[in-house]
Length: 151
Image (cartoon, rainbow, N blue to C red; front, side, top):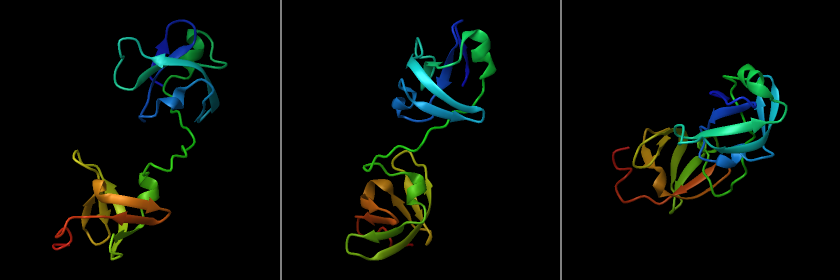
């Protein structure tokens, strides 16, 4: 939480996710001091910066209450979205191409403006845009010829 907003206990929150439903009314967020339930939220007036929202939490009243939770880190339970690749699920996954050739395991994911890269234990880099299927512990890629020639 960034700071109090007004006198009624609202706070400005910066989301580090692109999932604004994290601050939807009824959402429950965890902090080091316990849970907070969202009563209301709206994008910060004038934008307030990227990902900033004005949030009202149950049991946080007045500016003093908002000041007391300034700086708390909010956490939420993982979302279940089968169409999304999550980095923590990719690490350690075996990578196979569409012909079934095992290309190694994902050791990390490297941010890249064009397309994030799967870093394989062999040192090979595979743009995420070449992933055509994934499941628990397994990733299938369809890469152009020659991608693995120097790996």
